[in-house]
Structure formats: structure tokens, C-alpha cells
Length: 331
Image (cartoon, rainbow, N blue to C red; front, side, top):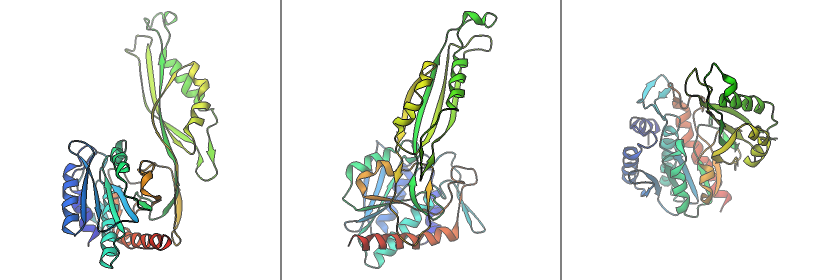
């Protein structure tokens, strides 16, 4: 199986999150043609995960086939394959399919494939898949790790800060209360708060991703809000406790929480800690988790997303090696 051709075929189908149906149908058909038994797990009225097996899997390769916008098709330039999803994560998916095909050709039937929708926006596909886990012992999740095994991944905590004020004519600011000022004061105070640290994952960091407020330039602002994304290294409750002093200025609303994850490794591979989140926290019923994939997260989600073709092809063998070591350890 040619992982480059398979990657290009998948990349050329627009599967921006929410629009994965066509790619799912193509993938399910392709895997059935390769002799896999395929189950389409409904996630909503149009989208579905794809589970492919040839026996009872002890090891499952998994990744997602949705992508961030905007869509752009594949092209090859030198030894690089460009396109939306080239490294995040359709190239990874192609390498996993090729590895499972290689293992099956050698008589190994204990390796399956689980490809999910919705990873880029809430992991709804993984949440559905977790309800139908089949008792496998290891889940090898695919994300761009520069062909290194993950030791751990950070979690994520998304919070919204809201400030309330009182509107007034800007020529008499003393008659109003500026919500924007209160919000800015809270954000400045946050900079001096000691956030949790971990010896492996490092120190918690955050970004202010969105900020909005006010109604007009000549009105004291009656409301303001900001959304923050923390990359967590432990229990998110520690961050909430550390932020308690801010609540005299703003209210704090919980939007999303994903815990950090400690991962399984096998000998013979370089390993690293990764600061991003994956579907792994939502696939807890699929066995001990590993994280591995070709490509760099630094080019994922960019207008120049690509995967190195030599690295993509080498990943097929790496996945085969990882699966064989896991199967041997569980024998």
C-alpha cells in the first residue's frame, strides 16, 4: 500500500470539522476493499467514526480525519507533501492503514484501526467511540510528534472571565463603572499569580485568546469578557484555586477541561513531552495509550501544512514495530 497516494486521496476530500461525511464514506469503502471488516459508528445524523478490524484486536491504531479550516488540496514539492491534514492527521492515518495492512499480510490479526471525527472541536467522535470499546489492551494514537513517542501530554482548561459595569456618558466617567477596566485589572493581576508546575510537564502557561467589551467609544463600558486557554500540568482545580483572588473583579466561567495524560512507551524510540491535547483522554476504555506520528505540530493548522514523504513512509515501519512490541509484551 502506498501511504503517499492514500494521504493525497484523503487530503483532497474536504473534511473540515462538521463536514467529515464524504471522507468517512471514502475511507470505509477503501478499507472494505482491502478486506477489513468495517463498522461505521454514528456520531450524529451525518457523521460517523470508522472502526476496521480483521480479528479481535489487542492493539488499535487511532487518529482523527477531521481538519481545521480552511481546506486546501494536496500537492507534492520535492520530498514534501502539502495539503490540509497532510500531517494532522491524514498522513498519520495513511501510515497506520499501511502498517495494519503489512501486519495482516504477515498473518497478524490482532491489530485494528479506529478513525474518529470531531477531534479539532470537542472530540465528539472519541466520546462516542469510548462507549463501544472492544477490550483492546493498547491504543496507539496518532498526532504529529516528529516520529517520537510521547511521554505525556498537557491538558487544557478554557475559562471565560466576565466583568460587569455600569454605563454612563464618557464625559462623566464618574457616573459609571467601567467593565473593561475591571477586566484589564484582572488580567494584569493574573500575570503575577503562581500557577502549578510539574517536574515532567513543566509550568502551566496560558494565552488570552479572545477579548471583547463595551458598546461604543463614548460610553463607559457596561460589560466585558475574555476567554483564556491554560495548558495544564495537573488538576485544573489548582488553577481555579489560584485564580480565586480575581473573583473580586470578575466572574469565572468554566468552558472546557481536558486532563493531562501520562503515556506508555516502548524501547527503541526517542520520546518527548507534548504541550497539546489529543483524543486520548476521551478514549480511556481502549487500553493503555501511546502517542506517535510523523510530521511536526509546528506546521499543523498553518497555510503551509506538510509532511515529509520519507518520514511518512518510515512511519509505516515504525507503527509495525510498535505494534509487534506491544503484542509481544501482552502475550
